[in-house]
Length: 80
Figure 1 (cartoon, rainbow, N blue to C red):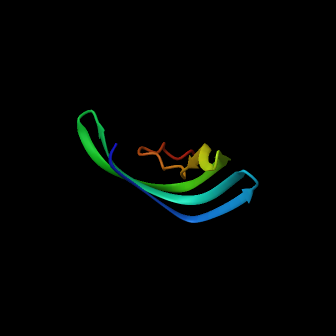
Figure 2 (spheres, rainbow, N blue to C red):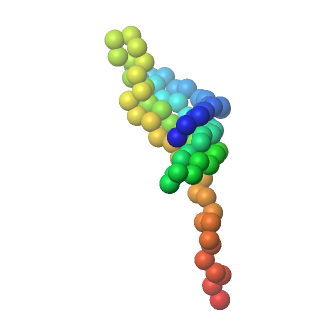
């Protein structure tokens, strides 16, 4: 992937001692090259980050993101 751009919004932070977690929405855009052909992709979804404060610095210790399921490019024929 090249020319990758992320943006985060609707960030909600929760803090408990030396642990924090955040939920967020994200968007991504990038140029993807596959078999010599480049195409532009855009996506969005939800994410969660878990952080720990280690020696005075916040470190991401877990990251999860998910995007809505995309419709298949060749949907199967309807069932009778």
